[in-house]
Structure formats: structure tokens, C-alpha cells
Length: 268
Image (cartoon, rainbow, N blue to C red; front, side, top):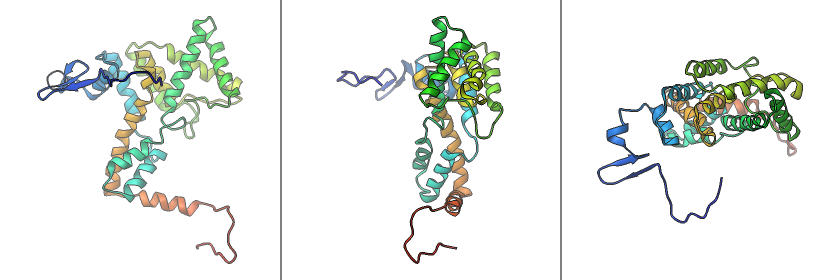
């Protein structure tokens, strides 16, 4: 993030008067509502350009791929929050999204930045595999995780990876970043010492960067997608609450390892 010397707040995204709302230079009511799908509108909002059919298909596929994956930590945080405050869905959604970081959801941005580092070395004359090995080794030497590789459940390739790659190929997208993602997977066993397969967090930037989606906006894709999934879980929570059951299971399984005062008896 660059902190500049701007003293007047400026935006090129939207403005309005009493009769008209303008978004990226277009009349919202006359030129956008009913004319663009939400995926198209999202791309348009972020970039200021109407997406091509290929860009729309790829962005749409990534949003579908990452919207839900069961009772993952973000979902549990949301459902437990709503159970405690059923009148505050906005707070429950926020509880799930606030954990978007280097391990959950935010790994897509980190993987995208890793791929751009590899591409820079390739453009300097290194082979794809040599560049991938150099960057992976640098990450390991710095004790950084290799973002987008390995998954606690999907020990082989995450099934969403091939589905996203297929969409990109079918749409005629630039496959450069897919090739880089594959190269990282190839070199990981020699550099890391064990095979770590591509997961969806690496596939997302591999296909999005191939259709010109901005690197700085990559983290927004899983955030947007997961918001939809959280709303679904929260609607279910309102009619079939499991938030307190999730909390109870955590309490039941926890092992206290601190000191205890004399005479204290654990609950049965």
C-alpha cells in the first residue's frame, strides 16, 4: 500500500446526483442493471472494463469453486457468532471473513504473487522449472509456506484445480500461469522433501491472472465467494442451529494444561 500526498478524496468508481447513479462512467439504472450478471459487474467494478466472455467464465468459475467447503473455520466462526447474536447476521458474516489470511482464503493472493516472482525469473532467461525451484527454495529458506500447495483433505490434487484449469483452456485463456503452477508442483518434492499438490488457492490465481484479473484484487475473489457461502450457512443456522453444538464440542475436547489450585476437581 502506497501512502501518497493526496489531500482531496478522489474516486473513479462511482458518483451520483438526485436523478442518476454513475458507476465507472455508466448509468447504473439504464446501462448496467439487467444488462450485466453479478460476475460481469464485479469484474467491471474492479477493473473499469466490461469483461469478455472468457474473463466472465473464468471469474465465475473461481467464485463457484471457493464459495463453500463445509464446516471450515470461517464457517464455524460465523455460525457460533450468529448463535450468540441471532439478530446480527452482518456481524456473523464479518466474523467468518475476518480470518482471511495466509492460511485460509488469503493464500490465493500469496500464490499469485509467488507466480509473478517466478515469471520475472523466466523473463530473465531461466527455464520454468529452474525459476520455480529458485523461488520455492527462497520461500523455504525464509521459512515461508508455499501458498496454494498441500491440503489437509485432498492429498492428491484438489479436484477443483482441474475443473478450473479446464474452464481456462476451454475459454482460450492465457495458460502461462497454469504452466507456472504446474512447475511449482513438479519441483516441490526435490526442494521441500515431500510432494505437495496444487490446491484451489493456487488454481485461482493461475486462471485469473491468465485473463487479466488484477493481482492486487486477488484476495477479494475468495472473500466475495465465501460471503455467499457464509450467508447460506447462516440462513441454515437460523432454522437449524448448530453454533452452540460446535462450541460445546470444542469445550468438551479441550485439555487444560495450566496449574490448578489445591482441591480443584475437574467437571465430570
